[in-house]
Image 1 (cartoon, one colour):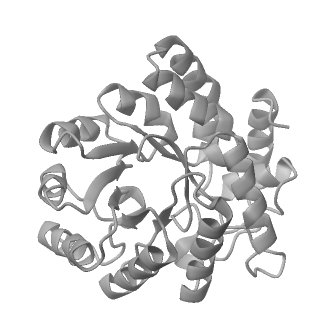
Image 2 (cartoon, one colour):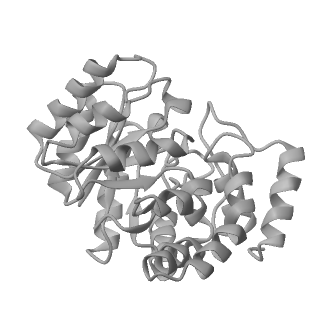
Amino acid sequence: MFEGSFVALVTPFKDDESLDEAKLKELIEFQIEGGTHGIVPCGTTGESPALSDSEHARVVDITIETVNGRVPVIAGTGSNSTTRTLRATEHAKAAGADAALIVTPYYNKPNQEGLYAHYMKIADAVDIPIVVYNVPGRCGTDILSPTIARLADHPNIVALKEATGELKRASEVVSLCPDDFVVLSGDDVNTLPIMAVGGKGVISVVANIAPSDIADMCNAFHAGNLELARKLHYKTYPLAVNLFIETNPIPAKTSLKLMGKLNGKVRLPLAPLSPKNLEALRNTLVESGLI
């Protein structure tokens, strides 16, 4: 299940900031048509901290219903509250999600034992495959490789989304964890390098706008066609850089607006892309053949 390109899906909003359910369904179809191997709603790219509990549940429900078993759904369920994380993970399980993506608690800054206890509580309570999400640049908390190795002993904790930006981390986790524990890149720029040391794919931001290229890169690598995988890595590299020209998902949603697929609306405290960066992003999309 955990191999290839899994899109970290944006959450579309109407101009009045309400959830745009019709656009969400359209984006899911765009992903499946593009060959994406799985859908990840309500992650950081989905602005999960800005969603109410009911909106979060609705996005997960719509995604599962629309996908209808065609590809796996890994529902983002993490927050900085263990109780809220547990409630969201229970809902994901009941709704039919294939797995849960659980980010390290942000702002609280728990120590390693606190992080271990947080994940173990969820894994003990809900029988669903769990992907640990480590992104210290956004959370202020770093779950270290030995702690991940301890968690990997739990049968429900099956994968890591690795987004520290340190390439050595993937090698550490692969070497410390059981052979069936999966490492997925959480940074598009590092997908190919991480697969080269044993990773299985990516939870991708770039796939929001170029699903076929990211899926094809993963397919090529797993088929042993390293020349094609490398070619697609460099083709999508400018996108992987400029989709983080400002805080994610502002550039991704702006790109989808320029492509005619969304209105680009983000919720406060995020704000629209600056004019200077808008021009740079537009140029990258033109050069990439997306507009």
